[in-house]
Image: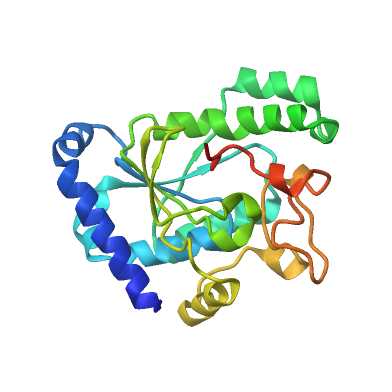
Length: 244
């Protein structure tokens, strides 16, 4: 599939969702934020998806329907926070940051600390739940559509990812515009479009998350080998894209 075709198929999906949900969109549009949400996870996939979205005719005529957001876990790399500023400047947009309530962050920090998530899968998932799932629930509560940058090629836990899905966990539509892109296609597009990159990629990181749970990978390792590297690969999801 060509890059142009990826733009076209995203545009067609947006048009279809708008047509089927127009009354709901009109009602929700009274809110301060848009009803279509695009997630920014400080990784290159989301920047590619953002770049594709901004080229669609649907976005050009309906920019007010969209909100760009990120989850500030309070454990992000300095390079990732700097990258967010670069992406905002590059596209001339604002990426709204969401975090869990202060008391919840304090509770999980006291219970788990900086490295306690490595002691058990349960502790790691509790940390992810508070720092990621709670604020994501807030973001998506009034949304109709969630646009993400996940790809089949990223890991075994994402092997059944589809272009268009109904996310049962959060009760809304979900589009994964580059779900079928290979690694080489991804980086070819990045170079062709001269998109900004997180400085951590140059340091050997291939998948970027919170600092205590992400490391650089060695040559030949899987893309997500640096995420929760002490766990079984079948468990390597934080819950944002959990599948039934």
